[in-house]
Length: 355
Image (cartoon, rainbow, N blue to C red; front, side, top):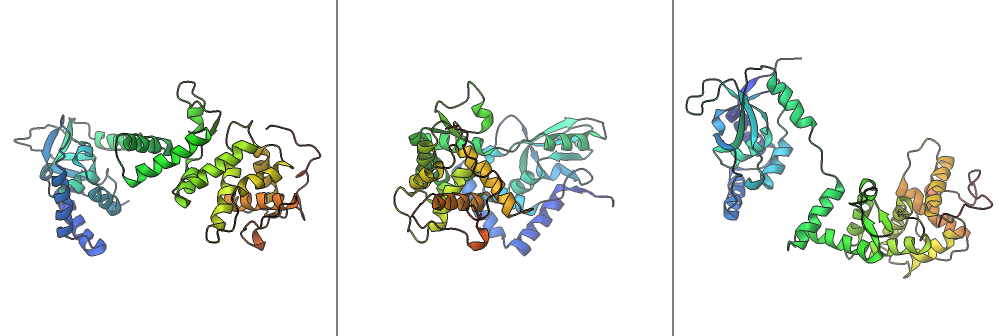
C-alpha cells in the first residue's frame, strides 16, 4: 500500500472547493448564499469546547478516510452551527498561543471542511494531549465503529415530536398523517424489540413493525386512506393475530399501487379480497408462509419478491374462491399458478385456526 500523506487541512479545503466548482457546479456565490442563510437564522456553535482556528489543524491520511465530496455537500446544504459537534484532535503538547507540533484531527474531518467552506475561520474542537503515536489510529477506529445509525422508529418518533411542538415541515406532517392511521385503526407502529418491552410497548392489541412498508403506503397516498384501509381490512378478517402480517400488508398495498392509474377497484375491495382468502387460510401468517412456498415451487432459485408474490397470491386465491373483482397483476409471467400448479400441501384439508 502506498504511503498516504499528512496534510494541512487548509490545503485539503482548497482542493475540495475547486472540486465542488468543477465537478458539482457549486460556486463561491452559492457557498456565500448558504452562509448568509446560516447567519440569518442566528444560530450559534455549541459552548463547552474551544473554538480552534482551522489553519492549525492537520489530517493524517494514514489514519483518516478519503474526503467524500457528496457527504460534504450534504452537510453544507443542511448546515446548522448548533449541530456542529466538536471535532476531535490530538497533539503531544498543546499550546494555542505557541503551538509547535501538528494538531492531528482524528474525527470530524467532513464537518470541519464544511464549516471552512462556509467561511468560518474556527471550528469547535477538543484536543487530546498524548505522546502515544498509535492513538490517532486507535481513536479514529473507535469513534467510527461505535456509532449506531438511527433506526426508522427513532426517526419517525422524532418527526412526530417536532410536529407536536408546532413544526409543519412536510416530513413531519407526513409522519403525523401516517401515525394517525395507525391510531385510528388501533395498531401500534413499533419495532419488535419495543413490542417485547413491558414499559415501552404500545397499548393496542395489534402492532406493525415494518416501517418501510408503512412509508410506502403513505408515499402512495398522502391522505392516509390507503394505509387505513389496509390495516382495517387485516384487523377485521384476522382479529386474533397480534402482529399485522407484513406479507399481507404489502400484497394489498401492491394491488392498490397497480390500480392507481386506473381507479377501477371499488370501495371496500380489500375486505372483499380478504373475506375470500380467509375461506382457505384462517391466518394471515399462514397466507404469507404458503405464498412463499408457492413462490419457491414455481420460481425455483429466484429471489423472493414480496410485493409481486403476495399481491399475485392474494389475487389468485381470491379468484379461485369465486371473487368477481378484476384485480390487477404483474402479468402472465408473474402468476403464482395457485390453481393450476399448487405446491404439495398448499391446500391441506383443514388449516389450523390461529385467528
